[in-house]
Structures are given as C-alpha cells and as structure tokens.
Image (cartoon, rainbow, N blue to C red; front, side, top):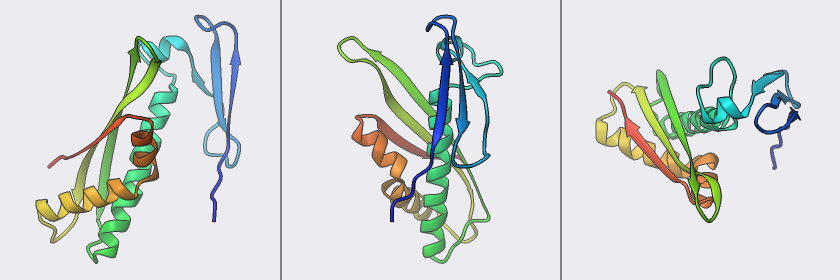
Amino acid sequence: MAIEREATATWEGNLARGVGRLSSASSVGFNGLAFSLPTRIGQPGDETSPEELLAAAHAGCYAMALASVLTNAEVPPGRLDVSCRVTLDEHSDEGFRITRSALVVEADVDGVSRDALRAAMDAADQACPYSALLRGAGASVETAIKR
C-alpha cells in the first residue's frame, strides 16, 4: 500500500529578492509558510526553509520508527525527544547537496540500558524511510544519545 501526501510551493520574484510560500495540500497541517533565499542561507528569522522542513520530517519519521522498535521489544517509550540538524553544502562540481543529517535522541524508556537503546536506535535508523532516502542521495546519517 503506497502512502501519498502532497504539498505545494509558490514562488514570486527573482531568487535574491523573491519569496515563497509552502502549504500542505493533503491536510490542513500548514498553510503559507514563508521561505526565501536569505532565510535559506542566512538567519531564518520568522521564516522557514526546505532544509528545516526536511530536518523536521526526518526527526518525526525517526521518532516514530524508534517508538515502533521499542514497542515491538515490549519496552514502549514514555517520551522521545528527537532533534535533527540537516547540513546543506556546496560541491564545486555538483552544486548544493544535503551532505549530513544528524539526529540526537533523548529517551525516557523504563528498564532499557544505554546499549539496548543504542541497538534500538540503530534498528530505527534502518527502518526510517527518510534515513534511507538521505543515504541513497549520498548524505551521511548519524544518531546520538543525549542523556
């Protein structure tokens, strides 16, 4: 069964001074999120960027994968806080590419050792479609425990 979701982007103006808006099309999750070149390469201020949205999507997907792995191991999490930092870098021969996605997990899971949590995190990384997508595009995906 394929799952499909849709979003739209509208861009007005040139690259340097233009502005875009992102909206969900398959839900009412977000509407009119502003983005622009200055917020992509400089300080984001009160706008977003495609990379920030990718980081949010990767963190969310990974959190769900980790919750699934832990639940299947009969140690469901009380709470998972997952942060993600996506790196966009320029390559002289290829232009800009996502080169890294770094996930940091703070987990409230009763009765799970650090080693068992690390193993669950590795399994979640293998199960997360966003981790697979990023690796397939040549980016490194890293996970770390915050305690």
